[in-house]
Length: 311
Ligand code: ADP
Ligand code: MG
Image (cartoon, rainbow, N blue to C red):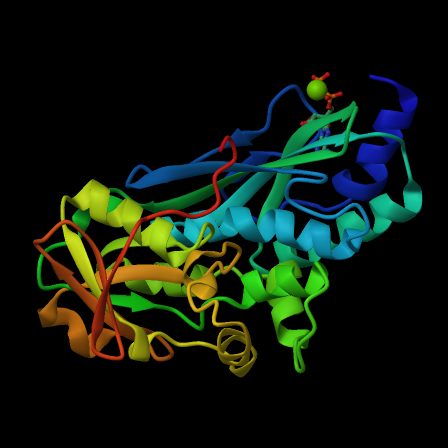
């Protein structure tokens, strides 16, 4: 390992001491060591962000550090796992201390919020590419799978949809008043970690909405072998997103654009009274396959399509 690389890891990452009892050994050896209670399972996920694909070259590095961790914690939330540790693989074109300082601050501020230990990683030179592997714990057998939705279950979302998508439109030059919140939703999404934990006892299936409601709910429907009826009038939107739909007629944007990081989950009739506050029922699981949307009384059949990398 070159001195510059060692110095960089020390300066920006190894200075943060582990706080979790699961972390037996953090940054500094060939591997980190985690220790789990016997009755727990480890949930593991990874997400990569590539410059020019997942973020604009001029994005704030502080926001980028936040978002890189947030999207990974969002996957743990969707599984009902409590985040405990992450690794960070950085591919950097150059060592830019100003950039690294802001990036690591954004990353570690969110890590501290959830008491997640950064336990290792890798640092290489090349086109700017950022990967996090996140690990969470949950009691054996309690994970929120995509495959558990049953006919008759209600379909819920944890908050308004489309703000991330609108934020992207604004970044691309679309002008709208009060677009501030939409930009924040795009650049600093907040992972629904506590809600994920709460849902372990309530939900039959769960997913985080990273590629748009239509596509992500589509994953639940496919894995569960069911269909869904959605009711447009029940789907929560911010004022800015409602204004966007009205102004442009592009009403499908908030259902198909990505970057929302709300949870979408299903709940049986018997648990309806336990729905956490802030969550909204947007429809119902039905036996007829596919996704039927009822909008102003009309039936619109939707194709489950969202962002696809190789299309
Ligand atoms: P090795 O050569 O054994 O792969 P490295 O020199 O890549 O080890 O890394 C030294 C230590 O620093 C390891 O514990 C590794 O996990 C950690 N590390 C490397 N890069 C990062 C990073 N970007 N963030 C956090 N830890 C890192
Ligand atoms: Mg290495």
